[in-house]
Amino acid sequence: MPVRVEWYLEDRIIWLHSSGVVTAEEAQGVDPELVALFDQSSAEQVHVIVDNSEAERMPAPTAFMSLQWPKHPKLGWSVVYGEKRKMIKFITATVAQLFKAHTRIVETFDEAVDALQLLDPTLPKMDH
Image 1: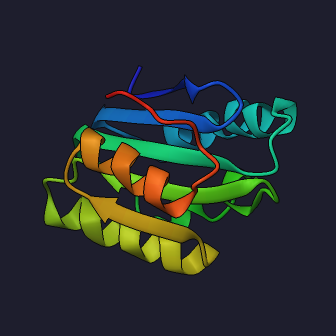
Image 2: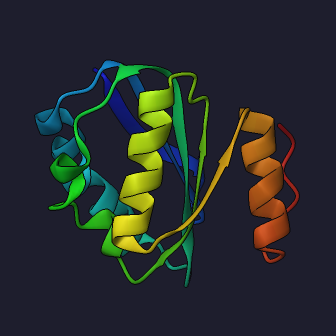
């Protein structure tokens, strides 16, 4: 499956992994699962680590406009990493601006975890 979602840190950090060619339907298809994770969390803020290290192509920014998770009241920071293609970086930056989301773009998973630890001092220390 080109898009997978799971807890990285239960109730606090969601890991969203994209691989291969991601279609608009696939990007929109995980939206209910993401919203459910936000809803089930007892935390005030839930962060998302977006792993695009294996993504080859993403849909146009308009495909993301109907998503509900970037508008969720519990969304804290989204930290994106692994974007090797300029077009994917452009799409990520455009979508972040459209949603007015707190977003950081870094190079690696370790940098993503470190960024979240700096941005949210209430997170427990995480080994990565």
